[in-house]
Length: 209
Image 1 (cartoon, rainbow, N blue to C red):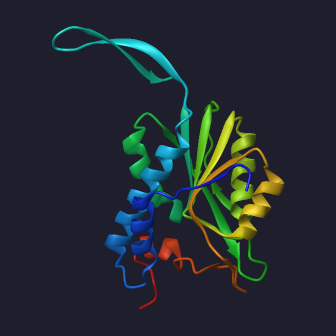
Image 2 (image 1 turned 60 degrees about the horizontal axis):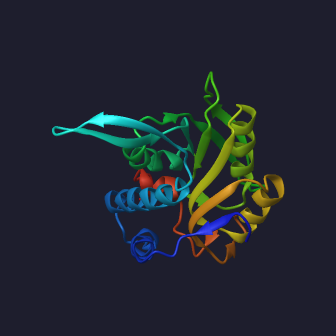
């Protein structure tokens, strides 16, 4: 699918297996999200522009490069929060903004409830959500980030459903999407199959006992 990058790296497959396992405790689930987020961010930032600079080493002056563009991380609450810290470790200068959506269970759709926006637009915005299911929240998130003036928007999701990919491709065909796996389909409740369950509940240990 155009503008969709599905990672096939062996480490991705390994950590994804643990993420899917229903017996994986929240502590290990968070670690797997952390590792997969780093691998996805590494791929999604391959084309970031650089600017030349010089630094003084203990022995001499060395030429080097630093990022030339402002980066924004936009997690979709709440599950997207688990992807922020590992990517901030890679890009500590990145700015973090938030979007929250309320899920309409009847229509498998979402409406915005929480948002924070930058006073000055970033050059590249990475929208973070572990699951791209129906695509409703992703479409709304990309639209919101565009309205903030971001020059380029990329969507990073650990698992995606074909239905959600089609929806966002129709609404925002220029948006690059990075995922670890494109799963089979959505069930009647709008959940990804085989998926991994509710990413937010599993990340924050909020599952019903």
